[in-house]
Every structure is written in structure tokens, then in C-alpha cells.
Amino acid sequence: MSADLHGSQRAVETLVSKLRRRQVVGSREAALETVLVLRQVVSKARFSNIDQLISLIRSVGKRLVEAQPKEHSVGNTVRKLLHHIREEYNTAMTGNASSSKTVYSISNFVLQGQPRKQNVAPKSEATLTLKENDPDDPDSFARVLKPVLMEAIQDVLDELETVYDNISKNAKDHIHSDEIILTIGHSKTVETFLKVAAHHRSFTVIVAETGPSYNGHEMARALSSAGISSFLVPDSSIYAIMSRVNKVIIGAHAILANGGMFAITGSLLAANAARVHSTPVVVCAGQFKLTPLWNLYHDFGALDFADPSSVLGFEEGNLVDKVDVLNPYYDYVGPELVDVFITNDGDHPPSSVYRLIKETYDDDDHEL
Image (cartoon, rainbow, N blue to C red):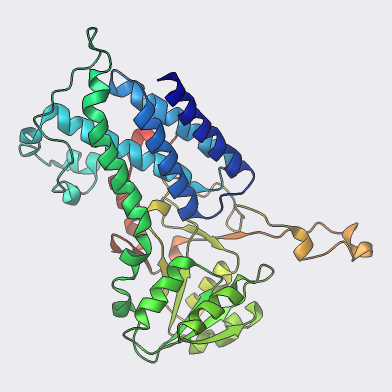
């Protein structure tokens, strides 16, 4: 058993190292790696009550978050897993009979969030007999509960693996024929969304190249190879062409509790231009990007910074000593600039994000 524990600890340390070195980049990749490590931790863990298990997962989650606090999806995945574990434990302990007697008063409604997901069948059966802190068999609690927890973890993993397809399934309802769509940078979610819509609609996509990373080039190539009419434009022309654009579709790095979001640099420029021209801004993002945190920076604060040499290289020797060069990687886009979030659980306005967070995470886990 000690070898198994060392194996799970080694997996945690490996992921911590990868996150620190930025070898795992991107919200979905970080979330997938986190789920796989937590699955290994839970499968090898020894615990005799639920508090020990939650404490173990929170400690592992805290280490991962501290290794790379700018990848919000790591903390979000840990919070979601803790929510599932508590849900399965409560169902196993109380049984399904008590859930039918639940009365939703106003206070319960506020405390528990909108109860529309209560009808989802939990994995655990009412017949499970759980005995915490059994002195005769300390491992009996873990032995009974682990199969149920493994199923819950697999559900989270399946959701991450199918997130692109679930977001894109209603793409044809959001894009109409002969529309001109503006997007910025290269978001895999937006790319899949547009490709699925192209099976049903004929439209044109204008891609801003997103300097200095120029991720837009990759996006334009991907869309063109799928037969979608695409134009690559410099970021400086976004405002000029916005009057011809019918819709702005962008991705997000993290969706915050107030309905704002962190997105690739240039998204704030596009969103402000769209607001001036009354052009709708649509954001495609998986629910694993919902973050129960607020923007702790000023309105135009950057979550992360890229290499400044791509803006001003050292060959410009006379200038380098005289200026401070900032190359922000993300923009903060406020909720007033976004019209709708398209997630794998449907479409939601920014004003509903707080409710989604209430349903997805427990209040105790907002701070790991």
C-alpha cells in the first residue's frame, strides 16, 4: 500500500512540476491532467471517514493551484470533484428516500441554488452501508465508497473529453446563412463551433491575427482547410470592419463570478468595438472554466504576461534601456460587454453565471 501512496504522490509532484514549467498549457489540458492525477490519488488513498478524504483532496488541490495560479481550470476541477464526492457521500448516507421529502423554501432556494439539477440520478445506491471510523475494519468505509467515487470522477473526465462536441451541438442555431463572423486568436472551442455550424450554414469568418503571438494565423488555416470562407486581418482594423460584422464569437480562458472573463489579448478591443456598433458578443467556453473568483486586478489588468522580446527585441538596443515593455497575454472583459455564454450545459447570460457557480461548486471550496 505504501508503494501505491508513493506512486500517487509522485504523480502529484510530476504535475506540479509541469504546471510550474508551463509544460501543461491551456484550460482543458490542465483540467484533464488534474482529473487524472486526482483519480489516482483517490484510488490509492486510505481513509476511514469523509473528512479525511476531503482534506486529502483539498491539500493536493492547493498544491496544484499554488504551482500555477493562472490556470484557473485546475482549481475549478478540484472544486467540482469535491462537490461530486460530497453529493455521492450524502446520497449514500441518507438514501434516496430523504431527497423526495426535500422542501424548497425561499431560504433553501438561496442556499442550494436553483434546484433544477436535483433530478439527476446519483451514482450511489441507497443500499450502500457506510460505517465511518470502524475500529474493526478501518478500510471498510473506503472500500465501499471508492467504486462510487470512481464513477463520479469518470463523469467529470467524460465531460471534459466531450466538451467541444457538447458546446457545438447547437451551433447552427446561433449562426445564420451569409453572416459575417469575427473571431480573434485561436480557440479550439470556437474552431469546433464554427466547423460544426459550417455543415448547415454558409458564412464568412474574419480572423484577427492577434499580435504579437499571431495565433490567428493558425485559426485562419484551420477554418480554410475545413472549407470555410476566412479572411485574416490585422488587429488594428477590428474597429474599422466592425460595422460589417454580424456577430463576434470568441473563447475564454476563465469565466469569473461576476460574469466577466479573462480572454486572449485583443478580446477587450473587439468587445468594445462590438458594443459601439451594437454587435452581439458570443463566448464559447466549457463549464469547467467557471471560476468562483472575482477580478482582483484593475479593469485592464492582465492575468499573465508573455515574452516582451516579441514586442521589442534586444536588437533595439537604444530603446530597451529607456522603456518598460509589457506584453499581456490575457484581457479582462467585463460582463457588460458579453451577450451570452455558450457552454456544454446550454446558453447563459452573464447575469446567470453566479447561479451556475452555485450549482457547480460548494461554498466551502471557493478558497482551497
